[in-house]
Image 1 (tube, rainbow, N blue to C red):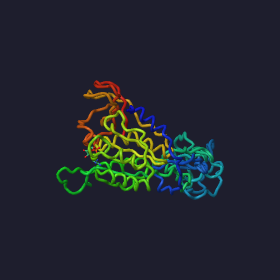
Image 2 (image 1 turned 90 degrees about the vertical axis):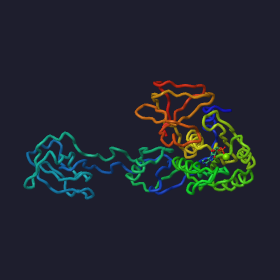
Image 3 (image 1 turned 120 degrees about the horizontal axis):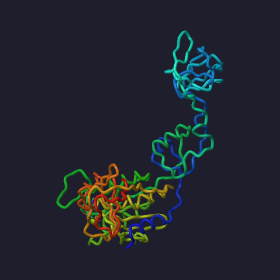
Length: 390
Ligand code: AMP
Ligand code: MG
């Protein structure tokens, strides 16, 4: 059985099909990953402009009063050249008139009878120079960078209306389990609400990938093989939940083989999530995850998300930060590494009452996972540990 670290390394080194790219309008680019380095098509800003509401004049012109030649609004080009003893009333973002090289902010001036006088020292030039932020051809962002709100704004500010991004991998979700029903109607005896198709779809989306509508099958080997085959027609990656353990009705690994997959991992020494399966068939990748909801969530977060991001050209480094244990952690068996839902606040890791991988309450309140190394049975309060932010 591979250790968690070995499994991460196998997945990180697994050869993936070359990603395709597509062009999307900026309004649809949020959350996507750039497929190529992005160079500035223009200088930023594109012209010298005022950083303040005030008066544009000549630095070093110490006239007792300045004649106001015009008012320059943002969006309207100036008409006159500023000469000694003169100034132009100018608004924030408006083009600096020729001759002027400073703006005295309004608060430092008084205006009377068409004359402006400086009544307080304004030490700042208050001018945004053409190209001071970016020059044509400068690298703005790199291939693999994610377009979040700030990056989308940056592209828009440069006049870029479309982004060339990695195609989102299509990820199929196949839940197995004869006991599962969709949330809504009351449960009949023995039934369980399917939560994994919801957590997986959300996690897939958060990874920039596209979740396909989840498909459900009962614990039936042939039905599982058929569902795998039909899902594969439309997805790049297939995630199966449930049916990978040693129970009488756990058919997923056999069904994956029967569907033509080669299984590269059938267990990872991790808690929760030990019976995780990783498999491939030509360009298609599949995971079989144990059905306990916390297992499904954690295995996706730790092992699948980095792979989905790599498919989109993004080298993911999980946000792992040091934290001080607020209380002691103990576990009965320490052979596997473990991921435990915790609260991380102000540098402290606080354990949440956690009743095992079948129960989602702790995860619902968690904002991080505590990584407990294999062999580590207890962690005393006050010890510095690594936590992985969610
Ligand atoms: P399995 O991995 O199929 O042995 O399932 C382990 C446990 O997870 C069982 O208690 C299942 O009822 C539960 N389970 C399996 N699939 C899901 C699912 N999609 N949503 C919620 N619980 C599930
Ligand atoms: Mg099952």
